[in-house]
Amino acid sequence: MHCSERFFSFKHTSWCSGRLHVSHSETIAVSDWLNDSSITEASRVNRRNMVRKFERSNESNINRIIADIVADKVSVYSACRKFVDDLRVRGLASGTIYVQRSMLPGLFQSVLGEENFKKTVFERLVPSASLYVEHHKKTPTREDTVKMLKIADLKYKVIIGGLASGGFRIGEWLSRKMPDLEIRPEGYARVKLQAKETKAKYLRYSFLPRDIVECIQLLHANISSDWVIPGDRGRLNNAAAYSQIKSYFARVGLKDEPGESYTPHSFRTFAPDEMRACGLKEKAVLSIIGHRNALGADAHYTNWVRIENDWAASCSEKMCLITDNSKVQLLQDQNQKLERHNGKLETLLEKLLERITKENTQA
Image 1 (spheres, rainbow, N blue to C red):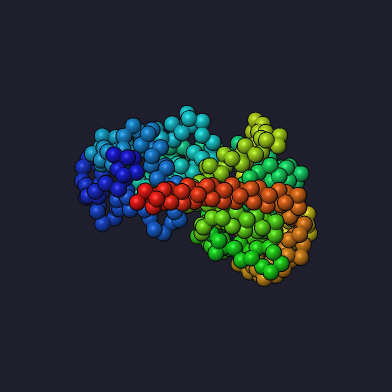
Image 2: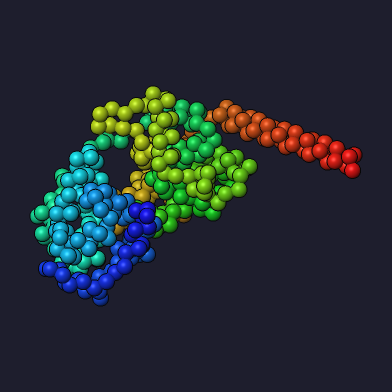
């Protein structure tokens, strides 16, 4: 049985064994915790990934581990300590270990009850790693970004261009659907991000210059998909896009160094820097990027009409990164693909007509 399937086969019962007294009315099943409807799908995915790692570290499935804890065969704190130690041994970043560890109290207090999982004991027996930034995200220059866009295929022109102009997190950008784009008569687009889809959990908008909008329209000229950036099976996978963007960084000579790296998140710095260089005010920049903490109380009083007008006036033209020559080449490439596709259809049609004619003659 697959790991994720085991989660949902867990049957919750009321236990009383050893030192643990687990009340059915005060706890929930593991599957309920994993499928909590009050959190986002991304958070549910993170929970499932954490439980898989917890199983691997403790060499057993989560249901068996909990049963052993209830039967007093193993301590819940020792199981947690084994998990966190294993993450350290595997060389995961301190931030990753911190996030994975932070989910444990929620899991075990929900499944075992708060009286059977004390956070004070957890903090003492399963100490947290020091949290610090281990990898600094290097920022590409405008020239570097233009080079990347020049060599990228159409789909990655949209991906890289969107990140570089909109300042999205990669998941925010790849999860956009066509109705999220409001294309203005001037050619640029406003992009809507619902509160549940953002890290700071509040509604915000970003903007795309007309060159990226034109690439999106060209990308969708011959496909039918609700996703702005379609993959082979619906939405394009984050990891696949991440890997491909890394390869584009390398191809233009932007290579990682110890403690410093280029990632899609690098454009979270590039985009606001470009907006500031265009003359957009700091409050508008922070609102678009989604830095709610930096905005403070002002985050609750965002005038998006004014921000859009200011962005359109100062950034809509200056933030275009794809040259006219690149657009001409894109159109030529698309026409060649259409010609090849039409050529194949014509050949197929000729063969079909030839077969039908032959069959009719024989009849």
